[in-house]
Length: 125
Image (tube, rainbow, N blue to C red; front, side):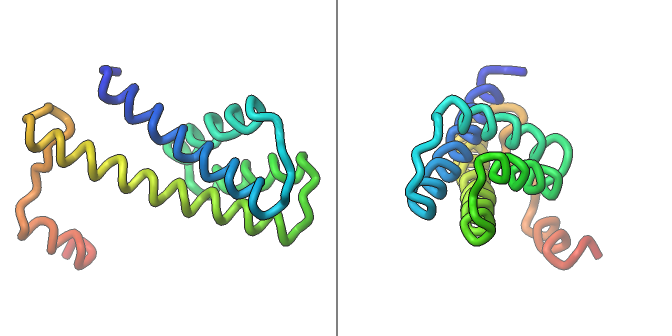
């Protein structure tokens, strides 16, 4: 794992933590221990990216159940955190791909032609 990948993981975990913390504070008016939220965000990011997004979402719901949130709060916070995580992931990968292409960083360069992009957009046909 090189330094760029470590930086990407740090940014993605930070984005997830920020959306989770904001969702809990805004929608529940509760102040949860920051270390607990950071641990949940870190584990959930690893599960979501390495295993499955659905399993990560279910893990988040489990954590929020442990925090004893009402069902309406639970769904709102979970969806806010997951959608924010997806948007943050897209932004981080866009920035890294752009910088990688500009400075020829191996592994972060954009190596697709317009024809390949359109083929993928049509479902790989």
